Length: 232
Image (cartoon, rainbow, N blue to C red):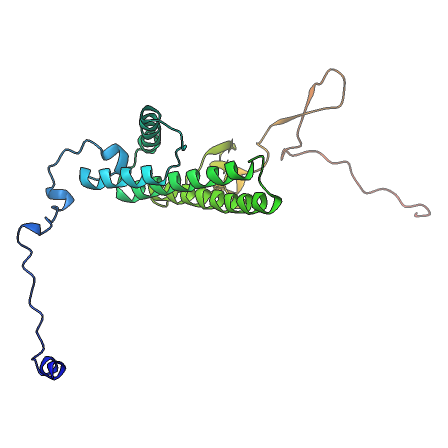
Protein backbone atom coordinates (compact mmCIF):
# COMPACT_ATOMS: atom_id res chain seq x y z
CA UNK A 1 0.00 0.00 0.00
CA UNK A 2 2.76 2.36 0.83
CA UNK A 3 4.39 1.60 -2.52
CA UNK A 4 1.22 2.59 -4.35
CA UNK A 5 1.00 5.85 -2.48
CA UNK A 6 4.59 6.61 -3.33
CA UNK A 7 4.02 5.89 -6.99
CA UNK A 8 1.02 8.27 -7.09
CA UNK A 9 3.06 11.20 -5.84
CA UNK A 10 3.59 13.85 -8.48
CA UNK A 11 7.06 14.00 -9.93
CA UNK A 12 9.15 16.83 -8.57
CA UNK A 13 10.30 19.36 -11.15
CA UNK A 14 13.89 20.50 -11.23
CA UNK A 15 14.38 23.91 -9.73
CA UNK A 16 17.24 26.25 -10.57
CA UNK A 17 19.92 26.10 -7.94
CA UNK A 18 20.70 29.39 -6.33
CA UNK A 19 24.48 29.50 -6.24
CA UNK A 20 24.50 32.38 -3.79
CA UNK A 21 27.91 32.96 -2.23
CA UNK A 22 29.29 29.81 -3.93
CA UNK A 23 29.06 31.38 -7.37
CA UNK A 24 32.42 31.29 -9.11
CA UNK A 25 33.68 34.71 -10.15
CA UNK A 26 34.41 35.22 -13.81
CA UNK A 27 37.86 36.68 -14.60
CA UNK A 28 37.92 39.76 -16.82
CA UNK A 29 39.26 39.63 -20.40
CA UNK A 30 42.99 40.22 -20.84
CA UNK A 31 42.54 43.74 -22.20
CA UNK A 32 40.66 44.75 -19.05
CA UNK A 33 42.70 42.76 -16.56
CA UNK A 34 44.81 45.01 -14.35
CA UNK A 35 46.04 42.30 -11.99
CA UNK A 36 49.73 41.84 -11.24
CA UNK A 37 50.34 38.10 -10.81
CA UNK A 38 53.41 36.99 -8.93
CA UNK A 39 53.54 33.46 -10.41
CA UNK A 40 53.10 34.26 -14.09
CA UNK A 41 56.63 33.03 -14.80
CA UNK A 42 55.48 29.59 -13.62
CA UNK A 43 52.05 29.22 -15.23
CA UNK A 44 51.86 31.91 -17.89
CA UNK A 45 48.51 33.28 -16.69
CA UNK A 46 47.49 36.69 -15.41
CA UNK A 47 45.74 34.92 -12.56
CA UNK A 48 47.74 33.28 -9.81
CA UNK A 49 44.88 30.87 -9.14
CA UNK A 50 45.71 29.10 -12.40
CA UNK A 51 49.44 29.41 -11.84
CA UNK A 52 49.12 27.88 -8.37
CA UNK A 53 46.94 25.04 -9.68
CA UNK A 54 49.47 24.26 -12.39
CA UNK A 55 52.31 24.22 -9.87
CA UNK A 56 50.36 21.76 -7.73
CA UNK A 57 49.80 19.51 -10.75
CA UNK A 58 53.53 19.52 -11.44
CA UNK A 59 54.37 18.66 -7.84
CA UNK A 60 51.85 15.83 -7.82
CA UNK A 61 53.41 14.40 -10.98
CA UNK A 62 56.88 14.30 -9.40
CA UNK A 63 58.33 11.25 -7.69
CA UNK A 64 59.72 11.54 -4.18
CA UNK A 65 61.62 8.94 -2.28
CA UNK A 66 59.90 7.03 0.49
CA UNK A 67 62.42 8.08 3.08
CA UNK A 68 62.61 11.74 2.11
CA UNK A 69 62.14 14.07 5.03
CA UNK A 70 60.34 17.41 5.11
CA UNK A 71 63.44 19.41 4.25
CA UNK A 72 64.35 17.13 1.35
CA UNK A 73 60.80 17.32 0.05
CA UNK A 74 60.82 21.11 0.19
CA UNK A 75 64.09 21.15 -1.73
CA UNK A 76 62.52 18.86 -4.33
CA UNK A 77 59.50 21.18 -4.58
CA UNK A 78 61.79 24.12 -5.22
CA UNK A 79 63.78 22.21 -7.84
CA UNK A 80 60.65 21.10 -9.69
CA UNK A 81 59.21 24.58 -9.76
CA UNK A 82 62.57 25.87 -10.97
CA UNK A 83 61.92 23.93 -14.17
CA UNK A 84 58.76 25.93 -14.79
CA UNK A 85 60.66 29.13 -14.09
CA UNK A 86 63.29 28.05 -16.62
CA UNK A 87 60.67 27.50 -19.32
CA UNK A 88 59.12 30.87 -18.39
CA UNK A 89 55.77 30.35 -20.17
CA UNK A 90 54.36 33.38 -21.94
CA UNK A 91 50.73 32.23 -21.84
CA UNK A 92 48.59 29.45 -20.43
CA UNK A 93 49.23 27.21 -23.45
CA UNK A 94 52.94 27.33 -22.82
CA UNK A 95 52.26 26.75 -19.14
CA UNK A 96 50.38 23.54 -19.91
CA UNK A 97 53.14 22.41 -22.25
CA UNK A 98 55.74 23.09 -19.58
CA UNK A 99 53.78 21.01 -17.08
CA UNK A 100 53.46 18.17 -19.60
CA UNK A 101 57.17 18.35 -20.29
CA UNK A 102 57.91 17.93 -16.61
CA UNK A 103 55.40 15.10 -16.19
CA UNK A 104 56.71 13.12 -19.17
CA UNK A 105 60.29 13.68 -18.05
CA UNK A 106 59.57 12.58 -14.47
CA UNK A 107 57.67 9.51 -15.65
CA UNK A 108 60.37 8.49 -18.12
CA UNK A 109 63.12 8.87 -15.52
CA UNK A 110 61.09 6.75 -13.10
CA UNK A 111 60.80 4.03 -15.75
CA UNK A 112 64.53 4.19 -16.36
CA UNK A 113 65.15 3.95 -12.62
CA UNK A 114 62.94 0.89 -12.26
CA UNK A 115 64.56 -0.76 -15.26
CA UNK A 116 67.97 -0.49 -13.61
CA UNK A 117 67.01 -2.02 -10.26
CA UNK A 118 69.39 -4.86 -9.31
CA UNK A 119 66.60 -7.37 -8.66
CA UNK A 120 64.56 -6.38 -11.72
CA UNK A 121 63.51 -9.25 -14.00
CA UNK A 122 64.25 -9.21 -17.71
CA UNK A 123 60.55 -8.80 -18.52
CA UNK A 124 60.22 -5.94 -16.07
CA UNK A 125 63.37 -4.28 -17.37
CA UNK A 126 62.14 -4.53 -20.97
CA UNK A 127 58.68 -3.19 -20.11
CA UNK A 128 60.12 -0.21 -18.26
CA UNK A 129 62.55 0.60 -21.06
CA UNK A 130 59.76 0.46 -23.65
CA UNK A 131 57.61 2.82 -21.60
CA UNK A 132 60.56 5.14 -21.06
CA UNK A 133 61.19 5.28 -24.81
CA UNK A 134 57.55 6.18 -25.48
CA UNK A 135 57.63 8.90 -22.86
CA UNK A 136 60.86 10.28 -24.29
CA UNK A 137 59.29 10.55 -27.75
CA UNK A 138 56.25 12.24 -26.24
CA UNK A 139 58.56 14.68 -24.48
CA UNK A 140 60.32 15.51 -27.75
CA UNK A 141 56.95 16.08 -29.46
CA UNK A 142 55.93 18.56 -26.77
CA UNK A 143 59.25 20.39 -27.13
CA UNK A 144 58.66 20.73 -30.87
CA UNK A 145 55.09 21.93 -30.33
CA UNK A 146 56.28 24.49 -27.79
CA UNK A 147 58.89 25.82 -30.23
CA UNK A 148 56.29 26.14 -33.00
CA UNK A 149 53.87 27.89 -30.66
CA UNK A 150 56.49 30.41 -29.61
CA UNK A 151 57.64 31.08 -33.17
CA UNK A 152 54.03 31.39 -34.34
CA UNK A 153 54.75 29.08 -37.26
CA UNK A 154 57.65 31.21 -38.54
CA UNK A 155 60.84 29.55 -39.74
CA UNK A 156 64.25 31.05 -39.14
CA UNK A 157 66.60 31.07 -42.15
CA UNK A 158 70.31 31.71 -41.70
CA UNK A 159 72.25 32.90 -44.75
CA UNK A 160 75.54 31.05 -45.13
CA UNK A 161 76.91 32.10 -48.54
CA UNK A 162 76.48 35.25 -50.60
CA UNK A 163 77.67 35.47 -54.21
CA UNK A 164 77.76 38.83 -55.98
CA UNK A 165 78.49 38.93 -59.70
CA UNK A 166 79.73 41.94 -61.68
CA UNK A 167 76.74 43.85 -62.97
CA UNK A 168 74.29 41.47 -61.37
CA UNK A 169 72.37 41.00 -58.18
CA UNK A 170 73.43 39.07 -55.11
CA UNK A 171 72.54 35.38 -55.02
CA UNK A 172 72.44 33.90 -51.52
CA UNK A 173 72.32 30.29 -50.36
CA UNK A 174 70.65 29.57 -47.04
CA UNK A 175 70.66 26.52 -44.81
CA UNK A 176 67.13 25.59 -45.83
CA UNK A 177 65.72 22.75 -47.89
CA UNK A 178 67.52 22.26 -51.22
CA UNK A 179 65.86 24.49 -53.76
CA UNK A 180 64.67 26.98 -51.14
CA UNK A 181 66.26 30.17 -49.92
CA UNK A 182 68.27 30.77 -53.11
CA UNK A 183 67.88 34.24 -54.49
CA UNK A 184 67.31 34.40 -58.26
CA UNK A 185 69.25 36.73 -60.50
CA UNK A 186 67.41 39.34 -62.48
CA UNK A 187 66.26 37.79 -65.74
CA UNK A 188 66.66 41.16 -67.48
CA UNK A 189 70.42 41.05 -66.84
CA UNK A 190 71.85 38.22 -68.96
CA UNK A 191 75.34 39.61 -68.39
CA UNK A 192 75.09 39.02 -64.65
CA UNK A 193 76.66 35.57 -64.93
CA UNK A 194 79.69 35.22 -67.14
CA UNK A 195 83.08 36.82 -67.68
CA UNK A 196 83.64 40.51 -67.47
CA UNK A 197 84.84 42.36 -70.58
CA UNK A 198 88.60 42.64 -70.66
CA UNK A 199 89.17 40.27 -67.75
CA UNK A 200 92.38 38.23 -67.45
CA UNK A 201 92.98 34.58 -66.78
CA UNK A 202 95.95 32.67 -65.40
CA UNK A 203 98.31 30.96 -67.79
CA UNK A 204 100.19 27.73 -67.19
CA UNK A 205 103.73 29.15 -66.85
CA UNK A 206 105.64 29.15 -63.58
CA UNK A 207 105.61 32.95 -63.26
CA UNK A 208 101.80 32.81 -63.30
CA UNK A 209 101.47 35.75 -65.66
CA UNK A 210 98.15 36.70 -67.04
CA UNK A 211 97.13 36.54 -70.64
CA UNK A 212 94.21 38.55 -72.02
CA UNK A 213 90.97 36.83 -72.80
CA UNK A 214 89.90 36.93 -76.41
CA UNK A 215 87.76 39.98 -76.97
CA UNK A 216 85.70 41.47 -79.77
CA UNK A 217 88.46 43.61 -81.32
CA UNK A 218 88.83 43.59 -85.14
CA UNK A 219 91.78 41.61 -86.55
CA UNK A 220 93.40 41.57 -90.04
CA UNK A 221 93.04 38.19 -91.71
CA UNK A 222 95.47 36.88 -94.33
CA UNK A 223 94.28 36.50 -97.93
CA UNK A 224 92.78 33.08 -98.24
CA UNK A 225 92.95 33.12 -102.04
CA UNK A 226 95.89 31.29 -103.54
CA UNK A 227 96.80 29.94 -106.96
CA UNK A 228 95.63 26.44 -107.72
CA UNK A 229 98.11 23.97 -109.12
CA UNK A 230 97.86 23.49 -112.88
CA UNK A 231 96.11 26.74 -113.45
CA UNK A 232 97.36 29.04 -116.20
